[in-house]
Image: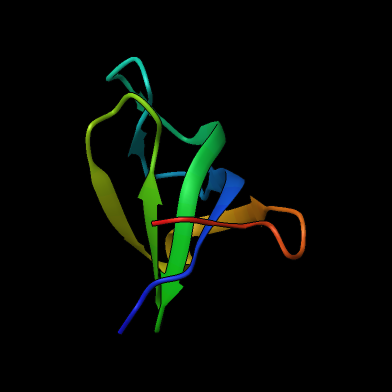
Length: 72
């Protein structure tokens, strides 16, 4: 399956964490590349050097502009 990546802000439910661009755990990032597959969100925070995969229940809010897909 080919993922469609979008630039978005991500906010997680309390109890879930992402690695922020400074390497510290965080519940919110203002800008990341996000792709969805099944019940999972793939999140790449610029500067983190990794893609983290989160289950749908971990996501409180993802915000992006429609038609704002980015290259892989």
